[in-house]
Length: 177
Image (cartoon, rainbow, N blue to C red; front, top):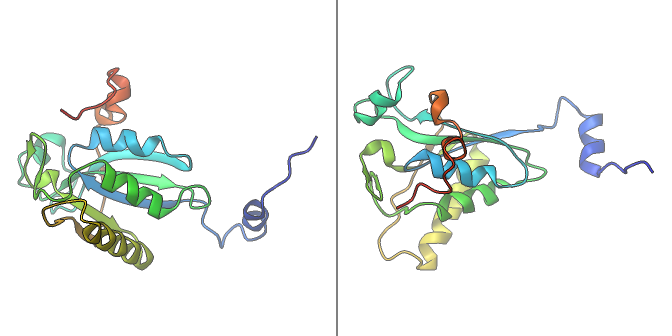
């Protein structure tokens, strides 16, 4: 029996160059290992890579970023298929996997490299991120103000290979204390 193709698949085939098959989303939520793992669990996420963004030093290395002098945040860049995973779903994962009320800190990790930030790649992402933050603020879920930055995406520098899928490579289920 032949499998029927979805409307999205038919449109993608007809307008192959006009319709994106993937988009990027970039989030900073403290230590990047657990956040990367959370995004990888979402159907429609094609890839999640850990790295550094939002700073002023070209080609930073982990030790440089940890020094707090490069201005970069540890971040996860998510490549996703918008027909399977919405940007709103990714925002929910972002909010659920860190404390957005602590400036430059997540758990025991302290420094601007651990800040909470959404690096948007389009005006649509900016609008959705701002609406999502407002909804969370209005929910009363957090006693303290949300300090998450919503800023334009800058160059994303992929972290060293040993950081990619760190939890999986090391047989860990989580990195949160």
